[in-house]
Image 1 (tube, rainbow, N blue to C red):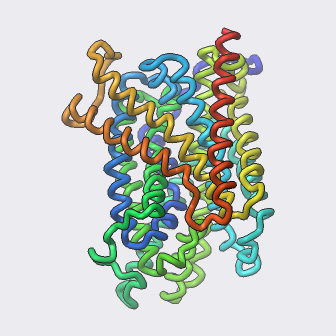
Image 2 (image 1 turned 90 degrees about the horizontal axis):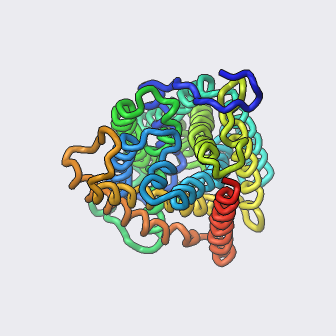
Image 3 (image 1 turned 120 degrees about the vertical axis):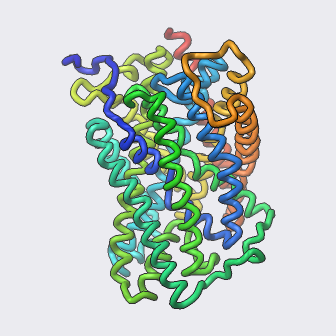
Length: 468
């Protein structure tokens, strides 16, 4: 390793199978979506099933195949670049990277809502305080950015704690809900008739959010250069993590509905709400506190996982000379793309402030989520198109190719299903929530800020082309 400041070198390969499984869990689960799904009532189970079949399985298949074809650092940026050229690759990477800028404030808004349960009734009185939610988000961003700059050998422990903080609270709520159902019955009627899906606009819009909730399988490929034997490790890690991810979402949603009606679920606090109610029913009210703590830590780990992965995008683009040379350099001591990490944290903080402008806490949360979904699904469309492209071109072979059983036919069918789901979700994500008081403002902010981010990406690309 060079001793010169900002030296350019290959990051260290420090992630094995266990590290990768934990990262997929911590980036694949976001407990906020359990609460969001529970607001749909029992029909949420059908929507989870549709999101899994329409998006999660196709995405996993695409990641397994494309990461075996192109195992370089950079993930979907490299996949789209190699199949559709430099501009398409750059815009896919840029869109995904910018999608995570509003993601961080939105996930911290959720985390701040859960953290209120750590301080008793006084702190819970801040549930409508914009100052609390913004302060929590900005401090959390600063902390995880600093840890990531210190290196993956340290931050992977935060990912591990985050993974535990994702599945353990959900497991606890599931167990408590089970005991509560056994002793007192279910608050929500759970049968075939009550679970029948309603395809009104509000429910269909939520389907796009649940599909977005199941993203995360793509994250580790951004740092393929830091994974030991990525061609072999990624296909082994994804199914192991997938069992945990899908179980947490589906069983967690059922557990919330057992202890509270759908109309009472707060999207920012639903899971910890359910934990508190179930704990009170069982005479262990104190148990809600450690669950709130685990959820808080879990979301910090999840945000850190996305920060770690996405920072490798400008690093890979910098290596291709499409960004200023400083992005292709790593920290001389910790070997991390510290410039990209600092930029990502700073821009996320800026969007946290802009998303809050002119609206309340829940309104800001909805705007940030809408921006995240649109900007993230654009590159997912590129990923599925890349699978269709490489499977229609028999010359597009780059070493051994790993696919799901069924080979090329399975790849094509799943890519078409995933692309269709993605395109539908893009349209739905722009629609404001039904309870949004100022729908025109919310729509303008979602579309306007998204166009600004994409336009900035095209400008950066043009500047990079002139520079190179």
